[in-house]
Image (cartoon, rainbow, N blue to C red; front, side):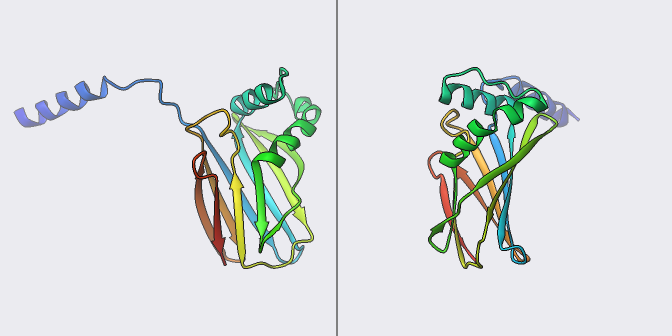
Length: 166
């Protein structure tokens, strides 16, 4: 009993030294090739406040994404940012990504992106540096799906791109 008490006390004591300075910066991007439509569909989820911060700082204007109307109002700026930070190359050919739209989901913005006229491929290179220019600790989890096969990667500021083979 004494050992259990000491173990419990030790855990409580050690957990009291945690700090609030270590925030988690994370986005999740799903890239899926649709063979029938010959297109690539991308869904990317980013936290609203982080996306507002990066757009405001990068384009030196106060950008709010708090309301549905704001998403449409700032669509051009969001697309401009994504063009620089999210790139997909299939068999050596860079895809022309278009931001179709976005919506709110809890405390995140869900971005719908598409590339049309994409022939089947064997190799995909993804560069995902979304929010990494604002947060050094940013992690971008990226899943690439073709057919029934899914390949996943963790992209960071230091290693912002990776290639997968199908």
